[in-house]
Length: 296
Image (cartoon, rainbow, N blue to C red; front, side, top):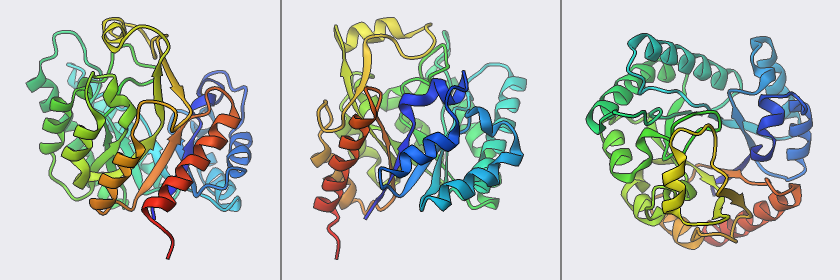
């Protein structure tokens, strides 16, 4: 059966920007959910000092959990080669961080969809950078996972490989057994596309998954896409919400993943409307996993 992790979606500002929450608080809070692990974020303030890395691994393990996944956001589509080289160095440090925490999966992205960046050039730049990181990851027993992403919380432009056609073209450029997909069904809606169609195209390469549900507070997806370019973070029309209450068809998703032999980690991105919401989302997913991967 796949294992469940949680991600502190509701606490990113507190853990990454203003320091109003300590990682020890989040770890203790997450432990009450009785999940298998925590997805980590490379930008946590307390992770800047490498001396802290083994401390947090022990802290999580003392609560009976592990840290299987690292969420980080390399920007590999910048036109400046020196910028890209620096991003590769940052990715290598995040791989080291994942290894030190006992993780198995470290995220990569394509990069920002800057004005005037062509599909061909963006794929070339992103694929080259990711390929250059793979040997470093393999030496440390880490798999690189690329997410069909919408937009990093702290980016100006949305993800270059947001669209299905571009995303699939990029992953097809990188045929390596230690490179796979972190599938996020919610993000596909933001490209105006069908998450089930995407999953059917990439199911055999899915290593991990983000579980969330997504809602538009007003307007349409077309309105959102007109507004997204050039504004830092998520636009105001966009909202995460309780899993099982939104647009995603988790029965179809889990059926496809089960048929593809998926047995990886599912990380829950939820709780933005309160911790009780995260509790309900965990319960929903535990029930679904039992339905599709019943205990023997």
